[in-house]
Length: 261
Image 1 (cartoon, rainbow, N blue to C red):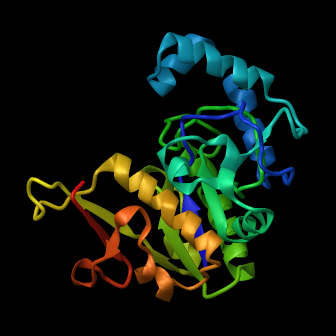
Image 2: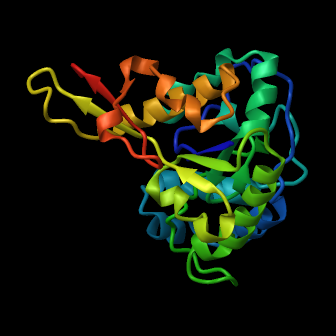
């Protein structure tokens, strides 16, 4: 069983690293091609492409110009410790032990607009490039066209080599998971759902984006720390106050509910 996550816009390249372990991303040639293409664009072009502020456009133009291989520990950073958004707040990978990092490297993957598919310890440089960006490449008019075949093939290889049954646990957003060709993957896909109910009306369950992102990270962390390698164990998840709801669940969409949010 493999777990897939989305990356995060927020990054942390300053805090002390809890491990010296690192690895090289396996689709760096594709990332380098994208970075070279984007490095040729003016900041205003990047601003329009990504719908970001002038300041962020300048920053990311500089990042693409500075993209240099090979990556080096200290300059670049393991992906799971570089991303700092809600998913990674919930995951709390900075508290992993060395064996946890080893387990995560085997069982967790991160989808990325720039790097395609990452293992947790793969080094990355700071960047911003969302999977939904309409960047024209030799493969087509989107990053989905650029990455779909290679990402799906690599996931298939990893699933074949991963412990447990050939199951892909989708804890990524719709935007990012769209890059995976599930028909070509050859594995069962399970997509957990996290619902919250306010104290004012416990019957009005809904997905709250911020909470669901943290829950995805917490579930990924639980799977790693507890060495869970089978989807049959998923109903045992109780992180962040969520509880499995069999009445709202299906075989491919287990649902977890939290009341009093």
